[in-house]
Image 1 (cartoon, one colour):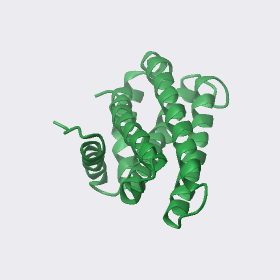
Image 2: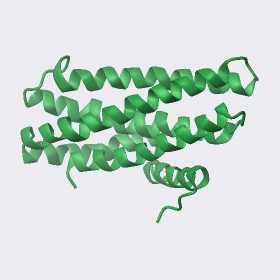
Image 3: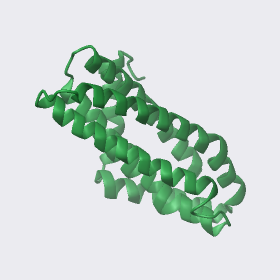
Image 4: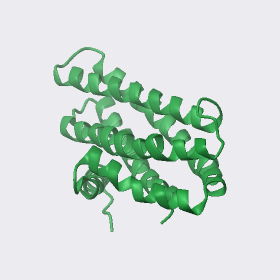
Length: 187
């Protein structure tokens, strides 16, 4: 599997998490308090999506693209890095709002709902840009040996962020959340 295909497969899992987050935010707007599921979804977005997935991009893919001639602070890499940072800010806002929900803080539901909408919109657009622009550029620019090195390096990021065996556990957690929250059994 090529390094961009690994990342595209992860995008599919992240998109499932965004659907879960959309649904949970709707429950919050409707006055429900799905604390445990929200906490798990936010944890997976922080660890799997940001830590592992974005970690692979920031530690390995982007430097490889820089070595192939793309500038880091401009163009597609610069845009992706800025969007990663914006997403981290929205994740922090949602985590704080969840804490506020738990203590019945006024306005916490609205803050969580707004941050969730902003985050899901940002990440959906971000994923589309990566899939349609950045990853195509990577497939054209990176020589075979660089692509092989990326694919070989990715599991190290997973182990560092998620722990040994943590990648498989994260995928299973995503599947479980999808089934519990969206009612879709994963085959």
